[in-house]
Length: 271
Image 1 (spheres, rainbow, N blue to C red):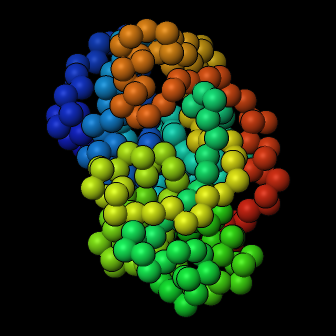
Image 2 (image 1 turned 90 degrees about the vertical axis):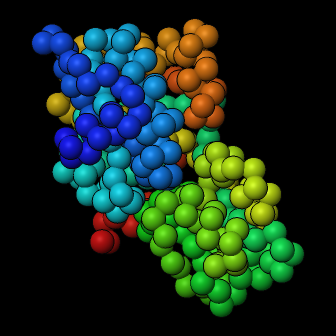
Image 3 (image 1 turned 90 degrees about the horizontal axis):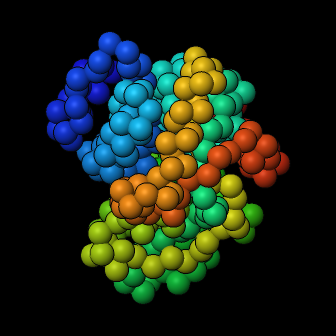
């Protein structure tokens, strides 16, 4: 993993120089998009936090969501940005503790179809192969599949590794439809978005968590949280937040995800 972090640093320009008094922490980002895309979006934010705190924070991710899940279970990331269901599960299994989340934001799953006019509603998907990011992707897979199941729509899931892969596969006609979330759909290029139409949107739930591993002490947590919150009020911070389509950060606590716990999802327990 250290070689991967170094390579990303060289590719995306964060400083590899770490002074003797600095801690180095890995920040894992759920691979909803390609590693290259995520590194380009998040590395400048981690640079900013590092400058504000004196804690050297480096980008990390995984090749796909199942690999990311294995690393969360092993506690490989010092900090991580993870989906709501991942948080409820790895809070229990690995001790990750909520630190922050996107302010004034909830998460909604979507099912998108190719905009060629053949698919008008979920019911038109009966008997189809559908694209999803990964079995335990919260809104993009679990919520979308629950809706299909509740409606009695028979389908075959195909897991393609990321949200971007879902959108690209559907836009190119390889699948009639697939699951995602509104934020990652909005992050796609205009030509891909214009080739898709949203045919279903879920209820709203607490959004993704930024959480820390138990090896992060309270003082370091406080420094990082302060740096995240300060981004809401500086021109540089606001510009960085805009690149990931965040309005801002807010402090979070474990109970914020009780709405997700109430769903009693057991996707990872049954693996």
